[in-house]
Amino acid sequence: MQPLQRVLQAGKLVPALDQALHARYSVHRLADEADAQAFLATHGAQFDAVVTSAAIGLPAHYLESLPSVRVISSFGVGLDKIPVKEAQARGIAVGYTPDVLNDCVADTAFALMLDVARRTTEADRFVRAGQWARLGGNSFGLGRKVSGARMGVVGLGRIGQTIARRSLGFDMEVRYHSRRPVAGVPWHYEASLVDLAAWCDFLVVVTSGGPATRHLINEDVLNALGSTGFLINVARGTVVDEAALIRALQDGRIAGAGLDVFENEPHVPDALMGMDNVVLLPHIASATHETRQAMGQRVMDNLEAFERTGQLVSAAY
Ligand code: 8YV
Picture 1 (cartoon, rainbow, N blue to C red):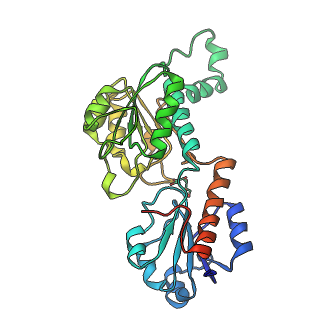
Picture 2 (picture 1 turned 90 degrees about the horizontal axis):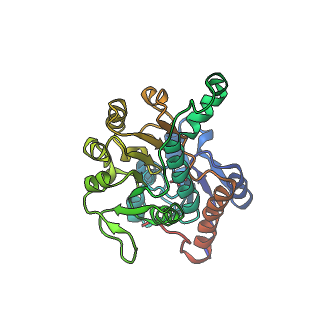
Picture 3 (picture 1 turned 180 degrees about the horizontal axis):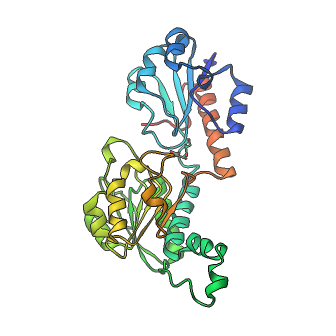
């Protein structure tokens, strides 16, 4: 039993987690400090735990000013902004919140797929603008059928597999690409991402972010996806070369895109804003009451398990 004495909260958290954290621990909010680095240089040694999120992350060099930290507990599954290796090298345990968000991220992938193909938010804009009332009948035109289409999944981790399973309900054919084939899954592995893009109607990106996957979806992949193919991204903005995506959309080299994530959030390029064949979401794939509650609970469970046993419920690797 190693109770945590003082927790550093790296940024803004969802209210329920913020409250639970403050009710249970002695917490300091780094966001209250005008100069975070200067604060840490003077007071960093008092903290034995850090709570952050996938969105906030933790700059690796902060660890130098946090010599007593034994555990980092992050809200989210993405680790691209968390210095996992550097922390582990210092003997710090790193916890995160996988699994509990699989369903909602998968649901969002389908929401984007259905929306961009069937043009539902575009149709909503059409109705609200009075266009239907003016033009009547079938004036909105046609969309693209989703049921029975081919889906290519990029990254067959826990969320990728959840998306692939959802496709059964839509009678879709699924193939996937990842660094190596995943054992025991029923879907066909494509060693070449370009071949997967050429084969599918919907290329769903759900791989992890970070340097290893930066601009994995490049000009060649988009060209292979082709003028009838749609790109869906619920992973990280960095995985897609956004400039290449904009050019492909402008030239009609792909049919459309459904995007929950962007290279420079919350900035969304103006070029995308005006495109009707693009659906733009403000990084909300896991943003439901139920899932955010479960993610917050996992953050707390990780801390409490660490105090009790020295182990985490969900340890990053
Ligand atoms: C959240 C995410 O937006 O889990 C992730 O990696 O990107 C999302 O679930 C994020 O955790 C909020 O900080």
